[in-house]
Image (tube, rainbow, N blue to C red):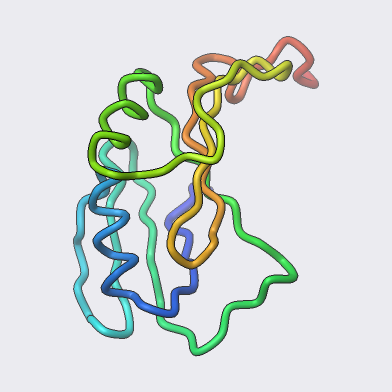
Length: 125
């Protein structure tokens, strides 16, 4: 089994589309104003955004994107006007993370974990 895509809600798909293009995702389906889909620059996963009239604030969504050059990525995104709620920081679970939100409040974590992403020292055998 492999992860195909994650679909997130948006009140304004066109605005969300521009945000995720700035993050570096490649637009592959444009069905504005109701739907768009992106490919990640690495790997096979995709991200879709669909229009909703209301976004539930009860159960938030968190999207993780890994990049080998996290600090450089964050600097480049800041130069493009992206604001972060947390700049890159080493975590005790052996990941380095930066946090931000898209325009709809979906939480995004840009991170680098390397081998610890799937094989941390405490992995169950």
